[in-house]
Image 1 (cartoon, helix red, strand yellow):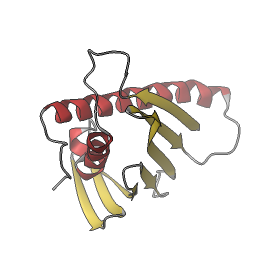
Image 2 (image 1 turned 30 degrees about the horizontal axis):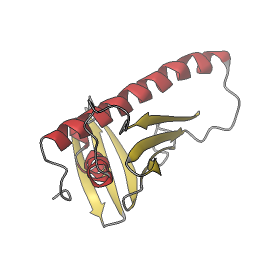
Image 3 (image 1 turned 120 degrees about the vertical axis):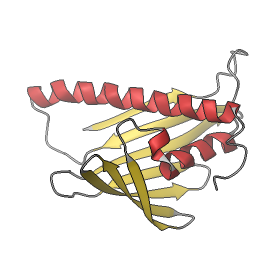
Image 4 (image 1 turned 60 degrees about the vertical axis):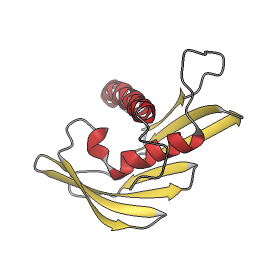
Length: 160
């Protein structure tokens, strides 16, 4: 299943929405990778096993299930999550890209790919509709948390 959607961050025509800077948005997206328990329901813990400015490897613990993934950063632009195939878990990718079609008009494009190239069956399509909605809700929650952290002043400098 390939699935993409866009979330508007700054609505320049609505003065009731406090705009985020690109820097705040970037720091929030990085924080989602650094401290995913703030963002993902059901995640018990995260162990970062390898870290550099451009990437990190992590082990995510959901109860007894451990998922290894890799996160790559393209500074101030994109965060890419890759889950390699492991045990019963198929390979998948999530890419979060900041888009700015005009100064201050920020969006985040969320792109999901499970690397399946075969057509969906009717049953798979039914379940994938639920997956797409769950992804959207999770991504909306991510942006909601980033806004909250920005309002608290926690995204005004790089994550320590």
